[in-house]
Length: 267
Figure 1 (cartoon, rainbow, N blue to C red):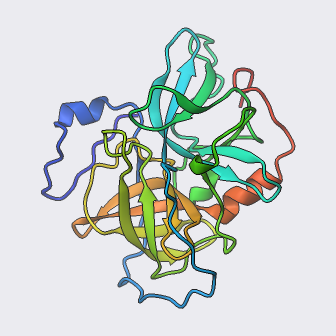
Figure 2: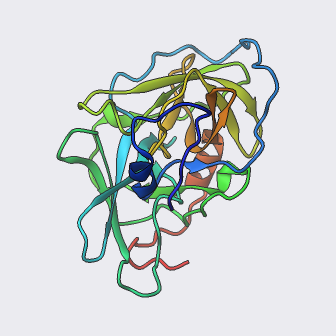
């Protein structure tokens, strides 16, 4: 999937040829997101919490048969109500069950940018995976992963019990790519609109969103994850991001009844 982001006069740091060669980016939106004025700050009744101190936005790596791991996007780790931890990423970043059997997906891993060891490797799905988003419904685009090894709690996020942020709320995107030097990169924005199918966030500034799909949005009020970045669209010299609401992700995880191996999965 080769995508070029038109930034209305902004010259991206990467040349066009380099951008076009990137295999998986945040999906560019051919959709009409909300254009209303940014809502005022809401009254939030949920308890206040601190933002995560650890690197909770993680790189997503995929390994296909006969190939080495390659960077394909971003993801995060989520703690469910029963204490189980699942990996969370996007459906559009990977390809399942290639019929020619030459490049079957075998494993997915999540890791901290700049570190050689993975935080977690997965060979099993947590429920059926979703489909790459093509319209305005962000809830179809997801992959949940079953963790079968101990995971340091500093990498794990808890879901916001509200299920989504409120319009006008300030949120932070913890980029899975980090700052390129082993540190965190946190990008801020304001929630424009929320419905069952998507959370829309107007970011404070322009940046290259390549490979940030799957990065978690965290509420600056509760310190808990409220959504997963899926799509991007330039708007008024800024970026409008569409996210999969965390309440939908939790429901999908808690209703999962099948846990197929990644390598054997066929759509």
